[in-house]
Structure formats: C-alpha cells, structure tokens
Image 1 (cartoon, one colour):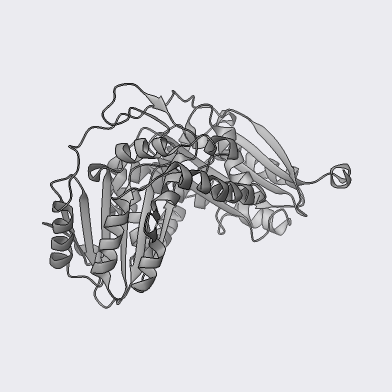
Image 2 (image 1 turned 90 degrees about the horizontal axis):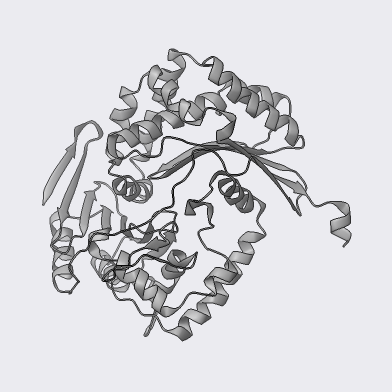
Length: 435
C-alpha cells in the first residue's frame, strides 16, 4: 500500500491497485465520526458508441442507458438494496454524469458491513426483461418531470446548441423513445464492458483505519472472480470547434424570462496537470469577468437586468468543455447584449489586473482549504479529478502557481462569436395558453 503525503494540507492518502485492476484510495480524517465511501466507474452518458468486451465490432446503444443501468443496479432478485443500507444505519445514493457513474453511502456505524453491501450489489448485476420494462415507466416519469423544469431544459438546451456531434449534447437520462429500446441484453453488454474493476475506483474517507479498510477491500475482491482486464475502445465523432446553433428560444409556462449564454471551449484535448491548470485558470477568468465582484455584475445588477438567479460556471472534461452565464431577467435582449459586449471588449483589452488575479486566487485557495474539511466535497470530487489524471490535492499549489498571463491565455479558448450560443426561455404566448 502506497502512502502519499500532502504536507501543505496536512493530509495523508493511502493507495493500492488491486490484482483485479481496481484502484482503491483511503483518506482517514481525524476528529470525524462519519465515513463516506464511493464506488465509481468511468462510464457515463457520453459512452454510447464502443466495442463491447469480447467483441470486435463497434456498436451504438440507446441514449440514456448509463443512467438506466444505475437505476437497475439497486434492484436485486431478493429485493431493494436501499433497504439493506437502511438496516445498517447508512444513507446510500448514486448518480450518473456525462463521464461517470457513482454509487455511494455514508454512515457512522457498521462501515465494513455497508462497504460489503456496496461492493456486492455493484459487482452482482441482476437484470430481466420484466424488471427492465417495469423500469422504463419509472424513468419515463422522471424524464417527463425534468421536461417540465425550465432550468433543466435551458441547461441541456444550451449544451445542445453548442455541440454538432459529441454526445454531451444528449440528455443524461435519454428520452422516452430511446429508453423504450433498452433491453436486459443491452444492460449486460454495458455492464460487462464498463463495470470491470480495472475501469473503476473506490474512495473511502472519514473515520477509518486505512490498513484495516484496505485489507477488508483487498480480501473481498480476492474472493471474487473477474475476467482479465481489456483495454476499452470508445468512439466519438469529430467535433468542430464552433457552436452548432447560434440562438434558440423555448416557450414554457413561466413568469420571468430566462437567458443563458454558452461559450464552447476550443481547448479540450488536455489531461493531467495541464487540464487542472487550464480549468482553474478558466474558473478564475470567468469569476473576474462575470463574478459578483466584477464591474460587469455591478453594472447589470444596478440596471435590474439580473437577479439572485444569476450564475456563471466553467466545466471541462476530456473531449468537451464549456462556460455558462445566465440569469432570470425581464429584459432578455438587453442582458444578452451586455454579456456579448463584455466578451467582445475582453478580447480587445483585458478588463482585470494582476492584482485582481491575485485577489481571486486567494479567494479560490480559501474555498479549497475550507472544502478540505468537507468529506462530502472530497468524496464527490476526488474520483472526477482522478479519472482525468488530476489530483484534487494539487488544486491549491496549482492555484498558487497561476499567473496573470495564464488567465489571459486560458480565456482565448472561448474568444470569438463562433464560440457563443444563446438559449432563451420565454413565457408562453397568450394564444398558446388559451389553446
């Protein structure tokens, strides 16, 4: 077992790659009574075209299958797994993102028993056509529910505007039509391909003894049989750097219009330290341009063009990256014009100084230092960083090393109107309401 020390953060991380390929990380936290355990596969909604394990031909599976599979993992022949966690006093959950599917629990007692339940239910799939068809109705209701949420429609609508071919443009849950085509055979194909231990990571944080927990996980995995690890072959169509759709409007039953501007990044072929540096630089750049201490924010807030819903963010993964800026507003056209003008001016003359950069760096460093006291934040963030060959605990030293020039250079990845798209949600028109 490898011991990794981060002296600046006073953290010691324990790591071992097991014989079956599973990466296990354990971070003991003194003074904590709760333990948080995550078991995650590097498989998300974008992984729709791939070569199944044991085969040679590329296939494309129905959209939404990673999310569907996550739901089905909790249902076993002997009953619902949630009940087992509840009996042990643990709180369990799961989520599917564009790039990964995570299963997790937190608790203060019976941690080893709960860890055993987590390992067993994720590594023992049970699908039948009957239970799959039953689940279609449940997930169909979930999709319909989200279809009625303006913020959700705007978020995915903006991403869909940006991408021509990349499957990030597709809703994680798929559609009622695509999930209708999912079969038990599809689920087993995806499970057997992406749920091999060599494509997964286990992270344990909290009130644990690292030696005992590593031994427990090691013994559990040694008692199970797995196929030999096989390199995964995923396929993504070539994606232009420009946005697919410049502007789109959706009418929904709302009182106040919603505006979102999407900025598609050109710089999406990064991994490891370069990716971490670029992502942090972009987040600082976005905060300086549009954050609550920026001149832009003050100007549009005082003009009543935004309200407390205003937000900005930048996301980066291997193969795609984008920034989002948006707010509810009674003057959508004026707000759009202000955002576009701010972006255009920033391309001509940098609207912040080296002192501004240092101030924002201190703010971000403070955020990370505070976040290191949250086992939930660390548990939910660590795997995402590691799957991109980054380390969460390198964020603070990387922030400290960023320069004014780094921020300016990073922002060039979103320069130009060809990188911009607008998605507006407007109230239903009167004739539509009465129809």
